Length: 465
Image (tube, rainbow, N blue to C red; front, side):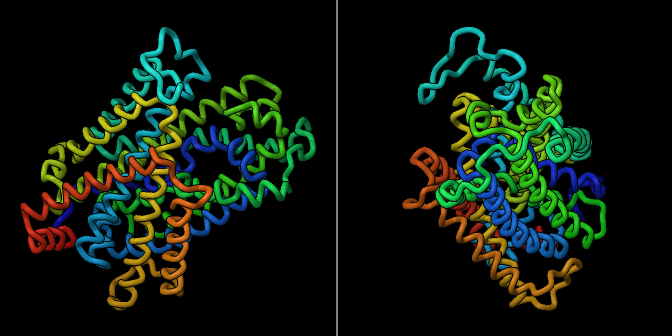
């Protein structure tokens, strides 16, 4: 069966979709929290460990994407490796991760803009956990959500163009910070407690549990596999390259900020990288430039995950696991219209809950992501065992060992979210995960009622052709 999409994405397009999604804007607002929680070395270690897990999982994605370049990524991999039920839940949980990021960015947009201009004018509409929600914040988030939806409505190529422009801007600002911290004479010697063993021992796991949410993004590439115009082997190479560069990015940013600012400066500033930039270049302009890079990061992350979420939703609709309305493509732009509306509306709803939502979304979405990763890694391992002769344009060396370690690493990350751990989800975050799972079960029961297991398998097999 021929693809319903147009193959219009080139090498740079998919690199910026992946890398731009991973670097996003989290590094602008969360770096101070990471360093204060685990110290410089502890935070860097957490991102190295998280990066190792993501690299292992990324290798499994690279091989599977080159072997099965079909829209939906995880949806296809888990069906062929583990069967129908696993495919549903693997895809449903990765959609939770993607939708959480989109909702996170809708809330983050007014937070970042609030550092440039006052968005808290007028009386608050209501409060969430004693934090006021202002009408201007909601309006800003709604406008941003609609604009991202409109960009994606006009096709993936327009989304990729926006991605390229903003990713390039982030790279310029971030590299100015990294190299400035290394070579600027205005930066004092290491001023924070880099080797604070107490922080490392108590805070490393708390930072580690946040890394899946920061690194997620490489898996957007397989979601758009049917829109990529490249040899399949190159797709796998670009995917793993983007993961390795993201690991370098986060660790370099943490080191740059942690060796530029004192502990007091870190504690007093939410946007620590922007403050470090101002300190390095001795100018307010440098701080504003970094804040604008954070704003660009919101766009790149939001845009990428919007592409990923809508393609995953489309794949489930196309295979009969969600109502067939979700499989509707625009006849001219080849964009999944219903899925775009769904993700846009979800992002808008998140703006009603204010910035307290951001922490909930990071943790609940992070759990959804690592559950999906574990099922993809298990699918990879099973396919290496059951289909050794499967065509694999990008073939991972020592594949069974890589698959086994990816499974084990993903399960360890899942464990960190469970009750009894310092990094466990709170009640609100569990309610988000539980509510999402409940909605998924309703869809799954409905699909079974409409098509039956055999009918869904038949649809999935057609999707694989």
